[in-house]
Length: 213
Image (tube, rainbow, N blue to C red):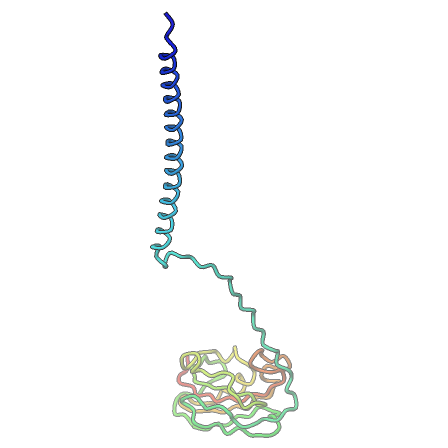
């Protein structure tokens, strides 16, 4: 038997209430999902910010451009041929106390002068000696080398040095002090010894042998 109009009407109203209720439930679920996604995004963002804030500064890596220092090239010394000798301009290292350089034209021949006579053995031209020394450039009066820069007396064979030493050192006694004035031809000649000795430079030396061999 079919339902009456009243029954059908009640059923229809009940169905509508069910449909409306279901629609409301779906809308609430969608809102909850959206709210959940937003909340999760906010929490994640907060955690990231917190981690960055508390990260120790020592862990930060700074990148800098590498610095390169261009090589420095000293200007080659030019010939000093014909320039006169000047007086000593630097302080002498120990054990030397004086160096009576002759000012004026550079020495044309080898100059040998004993400033102090030693009491030890006489140095021969084939000997290997240990000695204090200091070298001065004629044209500038400046010291270009001395044994104190190398830790004290140096040992060398007289057969392996410049001709001015090979010819001028033999005959000095251990414990003495000898001064040498060496023309460029018996030193480093027209080439010099860059960067400390100019071409055609005459040299002055003080030499104090401490032992032979």
